[in-house]
Image (cartoon, rainbow, N blue to C red; front, top):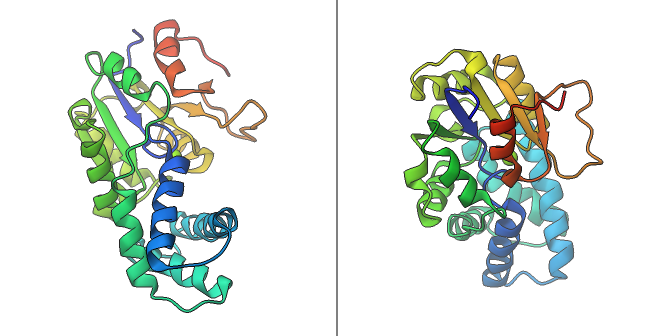
Length: 235
Ligand SMILES: [Mg+2]
């Protein structure tokens, strides 16, 4: 396999099927809270609110702690219903941390790579959710370390979290590290600015990296071992 000395993997949308987990956890949360409405519409509204607030978080505009309940406060607000956002948030995170749905082939990829590379999970997620899910999915043994933004107080795409991950991997040269992730902003821009090689897992072939130039582009995580063997760049 190609001479990378470490591989950094994003969690949500790269290893975990985040959409499925989120949908499952929200459906249970809304049901438990007695929230009425079309589940599809509730989900859409929540996702809209949530993606906006994560962009604020990534731009440094809101803390991880605040984000947890603030997204439900805004969600309830937009729905025009009364409710306790703190309570909703804790119910949701509890379910989410049990949502161990993996993307097709993810486990096999980790099995294949683990003997050859130190693998570091590098995620902007929430500590309790990510740690419980990794354990719950039986993935703990694959990773040398979990680098989680909430625990470090720094997040992708900023360079500090990539340096933390590099430290955990034994400080290989930046150019010998491959960052794999689905987010152009956090994983790809962040990885490139940190001086790493990057592999973008795009949602589908219509997605455009814009001005960014990932070293590799794949459509499914199961394609990752092949690019490592072939070393073929997508440019
Ligand atoms: Mg992701």
